Each structure stands twice: as structure tokens, then as C-alpha cells.
Image 1 (spheres, rainbow, N blue to C red):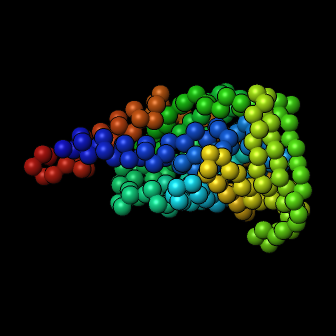
Image 2: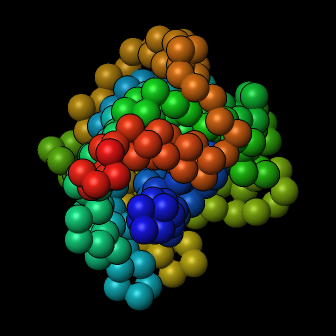
Image 3: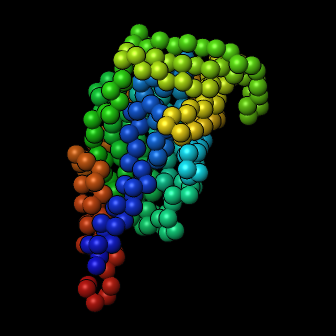
Length: 255
């Protein structure tokens, strides 16, 4: 019974898309994605920290929203979020409480295109999974991308006077990625809002409280004292088995 409960919970986490490949460009369930063509939208601002308010609207009416903290340095990205705070029509009742109880609410994704790796870190489990980057077009060289910008007008976003632009980024494979970007004149033309549309899904990212300070290099490293796994599925099942084996989820008769 409890093994079935364990596997059911793991399947729920995975089906929600809470195992994001942040190294990919474009909207996918579970959070915003950075790396590759997406990095080019930041222009000359290649070292900063910011708060990201993310909203995804699916073609079938599904909505997902969350807020996280992002650190960025020349292609390397760290995104911290609390999955129990995610709001959306796909979140089943009780999922947030289950994630907290299992120590899986806090999640950190570190994208390292220079190593072609992504680290998915769960501080509550003292564990992380190391995965190969799934971004086939990812590159740390700006020369591998062509950026075309067309001004659409001027608008104010969160109190910032912005130039609204249509930006098309073409990667080295010839694949085009189109976004609408609001560049703030008082923030070194930093994109305080980005909207992308792919596969019938619209993703809006708003960037707030941005600080143009180079993040510490240690933020982009896997935690040395955490247990390393080769897959997210193995990490989840192993760590949850440990918790259940400790008696946390078992009835008195089985202690």
C-alpha cells in the first residue's frame, strides 16, 4: 500500500513537469527556461540577480504561475523556487502539503551550458541530480546567434519606461525563437518583461528587484556535501523510501 503511495506521489511530481530542463529555450511546465537563445534577450546585461514572476497559459486553458529568484552570469543560471507556492489548474489538492512533508518543496536548478550539464538540487533532501543539458542549440558564444530587433512602441511596465520590441533570435542550427520584450530605459535596457509563444503556450516572465552585481561563482556549483544521483526519478524514489523507511509515513502497526 505504501509503496503504491510512494510511486503515485513520484508520478504526480513528474507528470506536473516539476523536473524542468532549464537549459532549454521556451515554455515548458514547471518553470521558466534559460540558456541558449534565451540568454541573448538580456543583451549586454550578462551578470545580475533578479526576482522572476512567471506565468504560463496553455492552449487548453491550463494556467501555471510561480515566483523565483534568479542569478545569471554569462550563460550560467541558477533559479531558486518553492514548488509548494506554485499555483495552477494542474496542481492536485494536497500536492503542496505532500511536497513539504517529503522535503521536496524547495528546488534549485543550475544550468551550466559550458559543461553541458544541469543540476537539479533539493535542499530538503540534501541531494541533487546531475543531468546532461537537453538544449541542442545551447552555446556560451554570442557569435552562434543572430538577433533581430524591431521596435513596436513604448510602454510602462512596473513603473519603468520601456521600449517594446519584437526580438527574433536565430541559433546556429537556423531555428528561430521569437519573443516580445520590454526593455527598461532606466535599467540599462534590461528586459523587465518577456513574452514567448511556442506550441500554443504563452509564457510571461516579469523581472523585478534586479541588481547588476556579479553573482558568486559558488552559486553555480553542485553542493559538495549533497548526495549525487544520475536521474531525478532515482533521487526521488530513493530519498522518499528513506523517509518512509524511517517510519514517518507508516501506521503504528508497522513500526
